Image (tube, rainbow, N blue to C red; front, side, top):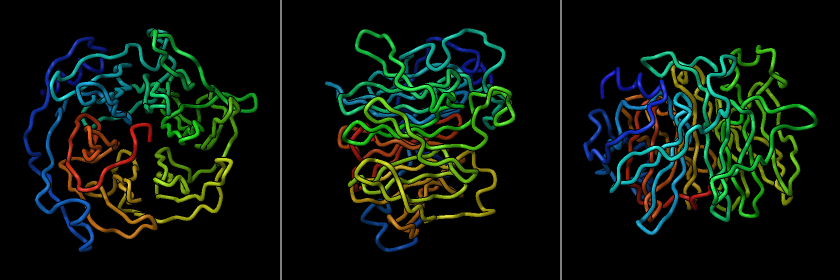
Length: 344
């Protein structure tokens, strides 16, 4: 897809087409660091192109099971759209507007370079399913978290803490008891942390439980990537590094420990995303591709990418499809180990 088409997406194109390209990404590869990697990702696994060089920017998607096997919902914050993709039907608009209710608001959305264009991140970013299957949206520029009801209406679940508004909700992760972890960044604010509307000077982690919001962490080292371990005993936070927190019975966190720090090698990455599989392995977008780690940070292997990865999600009916988002493209690789349930 050429540059003008990507630009059109950034200007809110409403209807799109196209489906599974089925092509191998030219620079894709699997690099084994530890022999244990073969049992997780086969040496012959191929990186496939789902949709290449099309979007303005891509947030964290979610796989939604359905009678046809399931579909991927993915948010483009530049277009203020949530798209729906499946292998059979291709790509279509699922929801618009997605994360900014007011049209043509000139005062929101940080400037982000998507590798070709400077765009504004005005829409939704992260998506998740609650344990009942409802779509929950990190409405980044609206600075709240909303649930999409079956009749199409939206219910605001949270918009701040202790009288202060969220800056920009980015990612969402549900625990099985419906407790919701929220990472709060700055992508919805034109001036980032220096924006006059910013009410938190650092990125933060929040917890929504039983209708109440609590703050879990507020620090310059907090990142916006979040994932739970399969037993829900750990919460992983990815920013400039990956930190593993122990999760208490009440869903609060303690004892943060850095399990991976790339240091200067991280330069140039759009962000670090993180997901886990059913065996507890950690997958993170790092230098050169997606790094597969043990739960305590040992590097087992890397899924090489033709461009920097930005977001990750598990999909396919058996949850063994790892969908990898760059800024403008979507790739997939099949793994030997299944990912967590869709709401994770």
